[in-house]
Image (tube, rainbow, N blue to C red; front, top):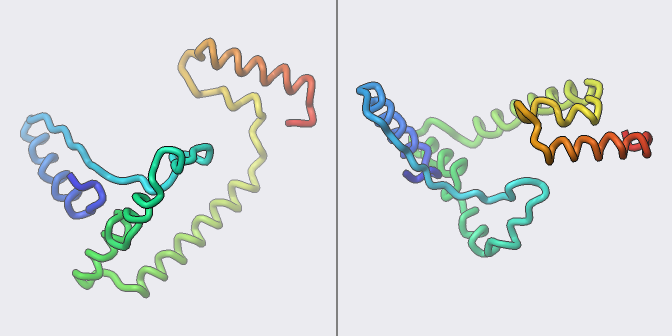
Amino acid sequence: IDGNHLAAVYLATAESRKLCLEGQPVLMELMTYRRGHHSTSDDAGRYRDSGQVKRMARQGLEPISRAKLLLKEASIWDDEKDADLREEYRLEVMDALKLAEAKPLAAVRNMFEDVWAKPTPELQRQRQELIEHIERHPEHC
């Protein structure tokens, strides 16, 4: 299934749901393309060709712009609605950011809580290293 194509994903999901309700097992594979890095510590340029990333960034190939084109073709969406929605969500994100920034920071030691049901030996070692570091350098908290 073309995971970059909203309509294809929707139709395949609807059909899969019908099959599941009939008691048949279904496995869906949605192929998509990740334009960005996995995380802030990842440099996708080390293992991906920049030309490929640029080609996949073309209007209508990645999921958001493709969905927007489909909706515009169906006269369901337009640039004004798009701008309004973007502004609405920008404001919502900014409000959530202000709320989050106003909350007190959790203790650094708490970063190891609720990660694993039973902490791994490696996690326990890292936690102990952090505790020792904080004891030596309380200014880092």
